[in-house]
Image 1 (cartoon, helix red, strand yellow):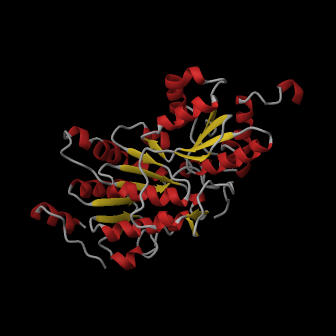
Image 2 (spheres, helix red, strand yellow):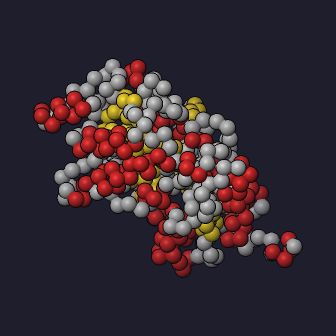
Image 3 (cartoon, one colour):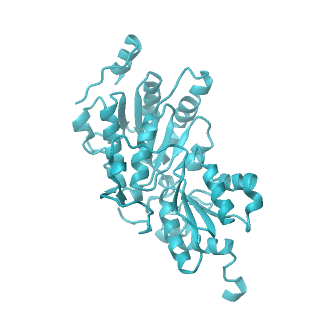
Length: 373
């Protein structure tokens, strides 16, 4: 790849590239999709999106630990090494700081790297390249330098992997100007958003979830088309409702949909918003929903302080305070490093019943504390 970059620098045009789960999350059976011709796992959606974008644009390449010979730690890159060769599917040493810096440098020179982290916890080793190089270069160069790079991999909790492998970094990266931050839930999200990320001229942090890789979702012929792409910055209303708005992203969307089903049986109509994009955040969709339902519950796996839910609360208070009929409810992970013990891990993460209770509180239907004593 260094040879490719040298050719780019010396020749000035496009370089000639050679071609060559333990726990299942609660996912609602009601997904709000139109009639689908087939089903697809999130893993397959990511794999086909990568394949099609690499086929369409010879500047796109994939790099990371075990992405080639092993076909990815989670098999997202299955078959890509055989199809595109080692110059476009690069196995790297275990050095996130090293290969992330190489990726950013390649993006400076017109290539389109997709950098895979085995977990976003390991991206901490590469923060200088992601924040100070990738995110800030366009602004600092007055628009002369674009950095078309995607940082992708599993984010947040999996199952029994401890504090160093379980953190959600959505709020971290979403706080940084110059980055776009996406968090897919379904196969449609994964396919459409990854294509959008690769085509975007700016650096994109693409937060996947390990426990969603094997989940199967209905998928339409439109989504299967190679030209399919979802807009960055637009949320999706997964389920319409009139009594309370529930915002969520990634795996928590499935939990929110399950909670909405339980609430419906008790006469509460919940509107579920799949954020899809954390930065830019679709404030218009969120506020429009709150102005309809007059109540808000935010759901995320991350820590409560300075979280995505806190930003959503601020937006609603600033733009729709007069429409609120109840205090905003935030459902977050516990404010502690992730425990290793399975029973403590479950307590540290949001559960469906937490969303149900919060929604009832927002609708003034919770059981009084005295009644439970």
